[in-house]
Amino acid sequence: MRKFLFFIDELSTWVGKAFAWLILVLTLGVSYEVFMRYVLRAPTTWAFDISYITYGAMFLMAGAYTLSRNGHVRADVVYRLWSPRTQATMDLVLYILFFLPAIAALMYSGWNYADMSVRFREVSIFSPAGVPVFPLKALIPITGLLLFLQGFAEIIRCVLCIRTGQWPQRLHDVEETESLIIRERQQQQAAAQQSERGAGA
Image (cartoon, rainbow, N blue to C red):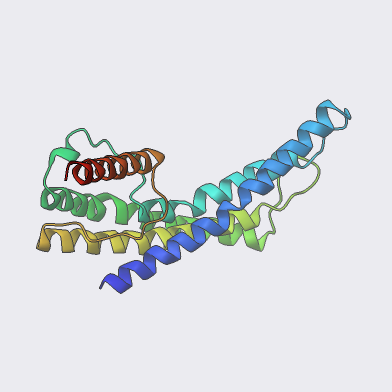
């Protein structure tokens, strides 16, 4: 079961990290537009389209990755005080009542929306450059599918936690800087105490 959970986590991670590279495209596109507009006085016709398409693609495809890292915003004022079993029970109920129906609606509506856009080869109406927007809209049902898979993995985690009383392990990606500083400080303190004991002996 753990291998299956890690496989879905790895899939979400790979997709999220692959689409994260679009931040470079977005940065270069906006920088180029600023240079053209304010230095050369020759604004582009496509910069706005490129910016919202790249940002939209990043936003869509990062959803499953963020869910795999338990990184979505949650009002945990009370939640963090509960036992893992209570947390898992609440999460399980919310996933079944709200998450799964919402994602099913996203996939269903997104498929129709994307299908129409791809069939008409839809382009942007915001500039005369005719930048294609149908690739962005084609990502909507794919986003829904990835979120559904990751949500299914989270439901399995909830069930395992309810059975064992502990949350199953997740794939680790990056740690908060604060966590690294705390660990470093603890290691330094442990080393200092060990050297004091050695000096005392």
